[in-house]
Image 1 (cartoon, rainbow, N blue to C red):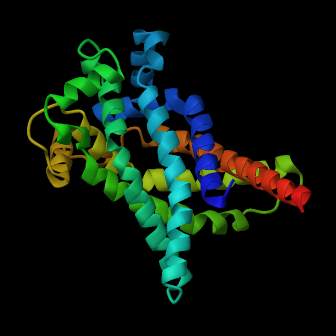
Image 2 (image 1 turned 90 degrees about the vertical axis):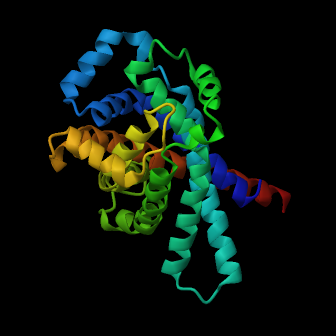
Length: 285
């Protein structure tokens, strides 16, 4: 198994573990993003809708996020190696930035999965669309471009997010004091560094996600620009900038858990796959 494929596999596995654990938190945050309501109100809505609807919409993010995270780690490594090979004179920071931005743009091809997930989670569509396949068929009636509502916001989010993640990931881990050399100490260290970094990035990018969510909750009709979407939200929330951040505390709480799990799971899978490969190589030698 070559290094390229291992990076993709580690990213996929880390995201799968994360999504299954954090989906309910994500759904609470989504309701707050969309309606500007409190956490208690969002939780009450989900309780009223029942357990059968709690994981409604998990298939698109499970497909999208596992593939997206796989692309994020795998393509970052691939782009970084390619850039280093063809442009060795570039600084390390420039190589990292270009590789991270390109990986983020590559992730954006999965926009249709986010689109379907958004429609599934909005309660106004519960009686209109049955499942992911039904929504996918209905969206096609408006043309292929309907799958890509919110694409601009996704590109604006993905590139800078990746630059921050890969640029600060190693540095942040070094800042935290060593917790020991045991496997569980290293696992905890990876979780903590990933948690704090993920919470920071997701908070910075939260308004862009709000814009993306509102754009993708429309089915049919004209495509609204990012600027126009911002003013629509701002005006509808009594022209209070703070209300655009409704749900941000749930967002960073979810991100603490989510990116802690992703970072720790990735490192565990990375070590297992690379260790296994090294062992096989040693036996063959």
